[in-house]
Amino acid sequence: MKQKVALVLSGGGARGMAHIGVIEELESRGYQIAAIAGTSMGALVGGVYALGKMDVYKEWLCTLDKMKVFSMVDFTLSGEGLLRGDRIFHIMRELMDDKNIEELDIPFAAISADILNRREVVFNKGSVMEAIRASIAIPTVFTPVRTEDGLLVDGGVVNNLPIDHVQRSPDDILVVVDVNAPIPVEEPEIHPEVREHRHSRYREKVKEFYDHLFHLHPGDHEHKFNYFDVINKTINMITYHSGERLLEKYSPDILVRVSHESCGTYDFYKAEEVIELGRCSAAKSLAAYKSKGKINVQE
Image 1 (cartoon, rainbow, N blue to C red):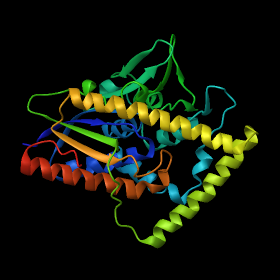
Image 2 (image 1 turned 180 degrees about the horizontal axis):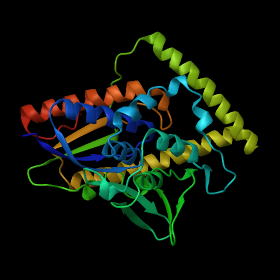
Image 3 (image 1 turned 180 degrees about the vertical axis):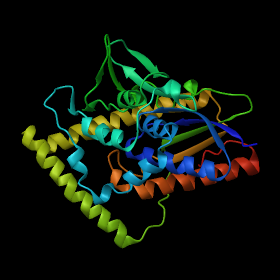
Image 4 (image 1 turned 90 degrees about the vertical axis):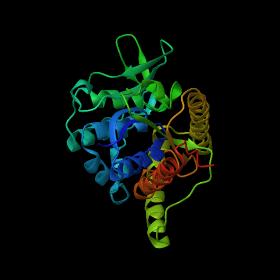
């Protein structure tokens, strides 16, 4: 009988692609994922897995360095956020059919934050896509999701490691994946020419992105760069400290940690590298758990 796993996936922007590698490693070693709870990118990857479309989503991610990534960017003049996110979710709906969470084969929960009512919102029923959209609404970047009486943003604001919301079952083990860990980065092997090709293409796309941004929002360019940098660092600090408190309160059987320096928040062109990093990190933690029978914090 396969060992059941209650899996918790943190937010962390593009670093969350490492969750794919972790899931692949768990399954390759015979573990059965019995339930998932995730925040932000963790909710996205967890939701896609629960929909049974991980392979399709991974294949799409790994082509992003070959596509016009920023053709998916839908700027908005709204003061609530820079991007609507409609184009991205249109593509996701083409890749996979939406379902209600109640219809999934495994329990799934996605976390968001209601900034009007100052409360955590847990999606454990209703549309998977709508739950993901609310959970990934990074403040000032994606427009928030409006409800009848609330305004929902990225769940990392309140709970970036939703250990308290994953459904447990008898004899399962708790596996937590934190992609914001304050540990040195261990980059997977990749040929230098391949790495430089990806980086050069991405730099071209970033230039197009900011050219468009500054056309819509004229002003001091340097100020704009600093503005988003401050927002990112502030959110990262919040998510880190909230995550550490949860890890102190709840003791996972296996803790997989990926360095917060492994890639930038929006470095989705690094999909193959980050997925492989997740797989390698999971392999180390699983090996340590098997040999020692205790948490591996990869210090």
